[in-house]
Image (cartoon, rainbow, N blue to C red):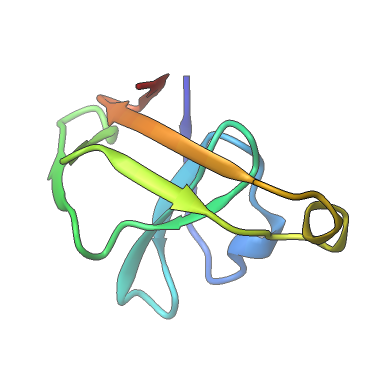
Length: 88
């Protein structure tokens, strides 16, 4: 299960966290394998309990830390549905 967090400094978020960041202009999610996903191009549905659902699926690759920058092929594809991350 993911955790909705608030705050500008998404670099401090943990895998599974998601929230509205970048000075409150974009949704960000940290995938279960620790990649930062810009969710700005996705449809976001906010639920009454504070969780979100993201459509369509989330696909990202890249590096968020120096350790990940040394790794090759950092990639994640899946879904965030009512606050729960699920791999495709």
